[in-house]
Image 1 (cartoon, rainbow, N blue to C red):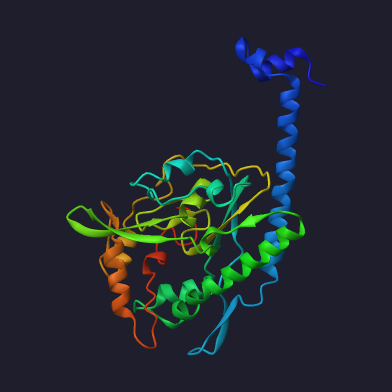
Image 2: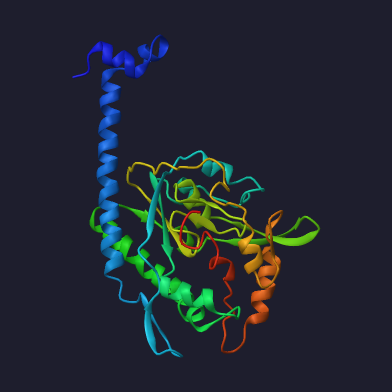
Length: 305
């Protein structure tokens, strides 16, 4: 039972103390406990679904060896009414096409982001390769979409079993990506205006910040893939250990030197137009043209530097 002295210590003095009651504190505590309980349930579900994936391996035909595609995900949570989401409508961030969680699902209470590190077996081969594309990256990284989709389907089913409504914006027919020409420095570039962005959701959910290469740098590095979903479940948000959108980037220039297209600079980040043009020119009938050299062989490949 909270006595008045403890209550005043928690609530402060004057108007704040008059506005907050012990019942308010009790209700808030109950919500946090329920949120923590739901967080634990979500993490258990994610662990179960990922461990049961049947398609998280790939055969590298040249080596005739089977390797894992992705490692178990980091999980971050944001409140559906996080004020950051409204700021994403700024043209300097995403743009007016961005739609916050409540616009996709009115019952939205939480948003969950997942970061799946690319397996060390695939990263090591891609890091060592002297060519922009190689078997491990093409077959391994190239399969990540199938693995992530299977994981999300499993999570939707698992949440439904627990009576939780979910929504995945990137799977909705109304999801859009528009390319808009912009100038960065004295170079033409491309800005992608999307109605939903897994990278920005992960930033808001405390998973990491952006780098010069424009990838998200998490505590498990940047070499990975992202996914997210909206839930009508109260959960405790993940506390971010950063304030600046580029805080985890040490601006070392390693990704600048790794880029075979010369599309990255410390001043203007990765030029998406040059990057996509280079990748398109790599594609052949037998090669999908996946590059990703800026994801390996750098200090933030698998850790936060």
